[in-house]
Image (cartoon, rainbow, N blue to C red; front, side, top):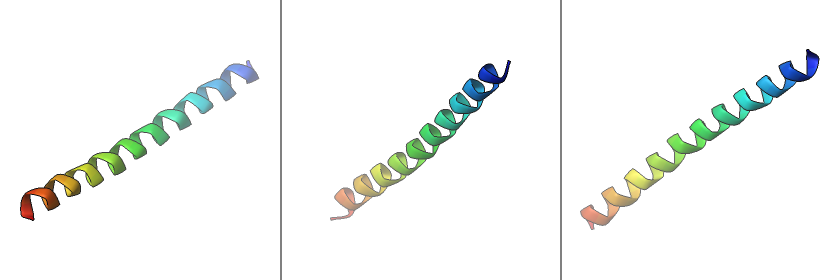
Amino acid sequence: MDEGKSVGEFIRKRIEWGLGNCKIYSFSYTLHIFYNYKV
Protein backbone atom coordinates (compact mmCIF):
# COMPACT_ATOMS: atom_id res chain seq x y z
CA MET A 1 0.00 0.00 0.00
CA ASP A 2 2.76 2.42 0.94
CA GLU A 3 4.74 1.48 -2.16
CA GLY A 4 1.82 2.25 -4.47
CA LYS A 5 1.44 5.68 -2.89
CA SER A 6 5.08 6.57 -3.45
CA VAL A 7 4.86 5.38 -7.06
CA GLY A 8 1.81 7.59 -7.65
CA GLU A 9 3.64 10.54 -6.09
CA PHE A 10 6.68 9.85 -8.28
CA ILE A 11 4.55 9.72 -11.45
CA ARG A 12 2.74 12.93 -10.51
CA LYS A 13 6.05 14.72 -9.92
CA ARG A 14 7.39 13.46 -13.25
CA ILE A 15 4.28 14.73 -15.08
CA GLU A 16 4.45 18.14 -13.38
CA TRP A 17 8.18 18.38 -14.19
CA GLY A 18 7.52 17.41 -17.81
CA LEU A 19 4.74 20.00 -18.16
CA GLY A 20 6.99 22.68 -16.68
CA ASN A 21 9.71 21.82 -19.18
CA CYS A 22 7.19 21.89 -22.03
CA LYS A 23 6.10 25.41 -21.07
CA ILE A 24 9.70 26.63 -20.86
CA TYR A 25 10.60 24.91 -24.14
CA SER A 26 7.60 26.25 -26.08
CA PHE A 27 8.20 29.74 -24.66
CA SER A 28 11.86 29.78 -25.74
CA TYR A 29 10.88 28.25 -29.10
CA THR A 30 8.30 31.04 -29.63
CA LEU A 31 10.91 33.67 -28.75
CA HIS A 32 13.34 32.01 -31.16
CA ILE A 33 10.82 32.22 -34.04
CA PHE A 34 9.88 35.78 -33.10
CA TYR A 35 13.53 36.93 -33.20
CA ASN A 36 14.11 35.15 -36.52
CA TYR A 37 11.18 36.94 -38.15
CA LYS A 38 12.00 40.28 -36.55
CA VAL A 39 15.62 40.22 -37.80
